[in-house]
Image 1 (cartoon, rainbow, N blue to C red):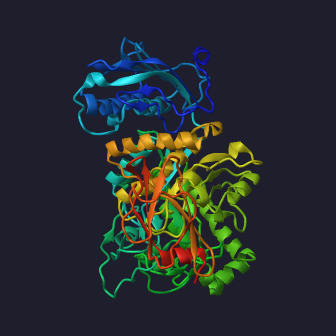
Image 2 (cartoon, rainbow, N blue to C red):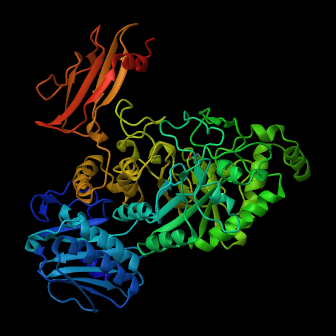
Image 3 (cartoon, helix red, strand yellow):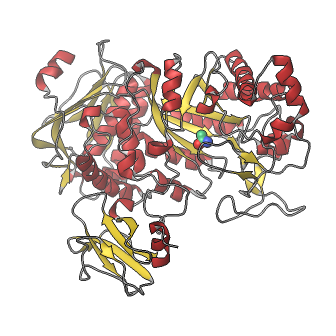
Length: 639
Ligand code: ACM
């Protein structure tokens, strides 16, 4: 069967933006992530009034057929599902091939004037093919409104052959800094699977909250899941007042976790649980203070300044000791209990143990740590951390799971079977692969979607920026290492500054489109201009689905430099082509009748604000940006 497909398929590397009309009205074929091969024919297939989906006798494929039918029904109200092994005219025929040469997750989707045929070797391939099929419908398919004219449902004539580049295509959601409900997590899964992500990493524990019920350690959720409520900027929030009730937070019960795992599994998504130790453990220590090397009063942090974050790769400095003590046997007894329940709840083969950003300043002075170093012959605190990580790995392995951790687990010597999640750039991943360990790439410079995605004057403040264009340059496979050790990659959404799901969506999209494409599509097909055209059509789909996204790609990039000791020069660029930038310096709101940016601007001597807006033709597309000249001077290095 594969041969027949190959005969009819032209492998189209370097495909341009597809210009042929598809769907109804003016839609183009616009698939994210870009498939391996798309061959478009002439004409179209109009869905009949009573479209039939034919599915094999396979529970997983039937479930996928239900998902497809539900989405089609939302807009046409006319779908039937039948079991069968042959296509009937004008149907959507889902078929599992007996050809074992087709790789896992591959699918072949063929739309002709007589119907739709989707063939894969495994149910996951059918699921991915259905996601592609849904993207071939016009955007209303992503919505919830019943469409009034079912006979307008038109699909392009096309043959698509597709398979993923990497098997680990992840997003991480930090549910500790802010808690997200089961319904919200399911909603996030619904969005991610449309773009063929297959892994959701839940960061379940941190200084700001412990989010998973551990039945043998009830205080973790009685105490650790709750903090005093504060609103504002992380790191500047006020500490709990004496006796102030901790009412903000939440946690997942075992039943909740089972529900999430089942929901994800039905959509071919693995859930990777993270229990972040030995650092980032204030919520656990507030629950069980005896786990700390440093006796004291502990609380779940509402986002106050209990640490000093020095940056530049230096070790963190704790004002409170937020680490589980590696010198205490009871720490490992505690972790044994935690990982026993975690291993039972999550079927995925890996458990993430964190391991990042451990503050050592309390360990440095601690007598129990010194005694441990002597007893175990550990020459420095890296080796203390490594001792801890190796013991954690033994616990996790004893529960039948593999361990993964952030790249700090390399410090002082990697545990024998550990996989490494590389976040401080790619170097940790490269080093781990050179030592023969599996790696997942999620470097801050390309894949940290908690960073601002546009200019600081318009984005909610975070300490760093990652624009869509940079995220699109993410290349998970560096040269010079064994490619089979790179399992894939993921984008990470830390939620210190993400208080609700609308903002989580805003931070995720469109950057997760870029990450999805880096992880699924052939490297050779990467094409920024083509991608941004597709991103814009998917904005329409997100609108239909009522999912928030950032429009930052429409806003100008501002580069301020110094002309002389008092004068700023501003250079403006746009991430995407075809926009005009209009500006003012006299406080009024610019529109497309205002001057259009042509060359670097000299900020007038007494101006207080620069205001900017972008247009495409006569349509405003960017947001109105207001930048104090004092800020521009600071950026230019003028005192
Ligand atoms: C991390 O961002 N601390 C893994």
